[in-house]
Image (cartoon, rainbow, N blue to C red; front, side, top):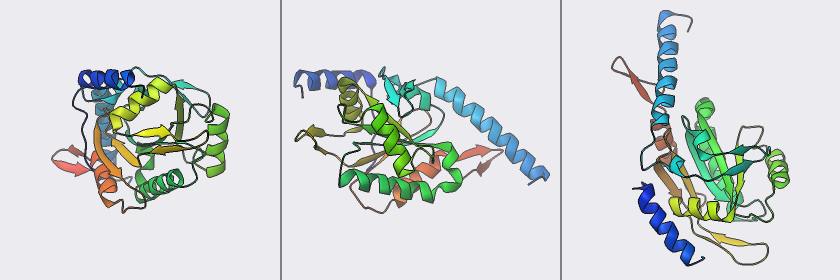
Length: 222
């Protein structure tokens, strides 16, 4: 399912409503390397000029599994594959993570250009220590994944942007949407995969396309 955020300003109005409801070595290789360097430079430059459709306009604060304070804008310049989950989830979240692993495996030769991110919706139990342990036990940290926790308001805000609905159903459980979101290098939503255990061909294709760029009339890095 494809989705675009139309305006952060418009989004703020929605959030206000939600809040009120509480609720080679050869020459060709050298040229390619040069082109790649130019591409990285262009990425960072364009990432600095964020549009009104970029989620990086949000002023939310997050903490990763290493206890480091970061903002969403720290992911600018890379493609991001992200999902909102919680680590004590027994069914849906492990499936979402498994689906993200399949996407990563399909793009393993480009994994260094993609940030895989999990954002917890459980502010009470998903502490930094819990996220760190979870990342280590599952091997996600070793693969370079980022696990984030934030405040309730920041989580609600991000969930609204991504169209993720969630609610706490008990002291230990949440009901939530099962959505994997792909952001481009500027933080704009380019693709979403909704559901569990689905074929990820469209998500892989959408992510791969974001890593392509043109140089001297040639499409490179696809």
